[in-house]
Length: 295
Image (cartoon, rainbow, N blue to C red):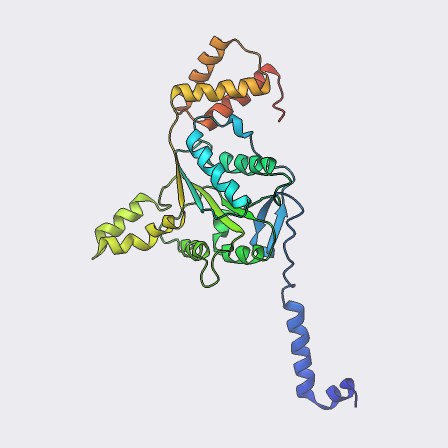
């Protein structure tokens, strides 16, 4: 007797077959293995468990990042050790806004691949958005079997009151039972050293029976980063050195005294001196001079 004949005589079997067919139609497609040969940088899209290749990364040359020499060298050494297959730490870059935290991560990644070309597989940079942190364990699992080594990077990472997604990050950094994949490190930038708002931590202290224990779980998140690299507001001399570096790199023709006066006025009107402020001034200056900023 054929299956078709059986289903005609057995309504239960026919119903089961219809259910099985419906389940197959609604089941998500099998997860495709990550193809990290498509590019050196990717953006993680958790909805489809997809790593979208980035054809051209928005970054500046490492030599143009001024006033961050110590943290630059520390990050470069950690990144090179990791790219060579040696032990390396997760890194938290924290501190003053606009001082080149995310720019440094992207520039060090490119510089490491340039210096180690032919000595190791290209190091991959994978950006995960703050709102997708809960999917980090899935991304780690996707990267685990790949031969490439990858930096998973989250820019402007912080957590607000009642936000529990930091627990997913803690689990991923610790690795749970399996342990963090040996071919993955996590780099994050934040304006907050402990990734939590100060008022949240103060409130926990003031309302808890044991204030220390009340905030320990939240504050301990930053302990998962072996390296803390602090960024502080730059001095006037460092700010002007950034300006001079950009002017020389892009060949902008301007009188030095005029440049100094305009650069300081630009910073004064914005109330800050930082790498971001310097870059915004250079964009304005290049536009006024009719000079494209070709990389």
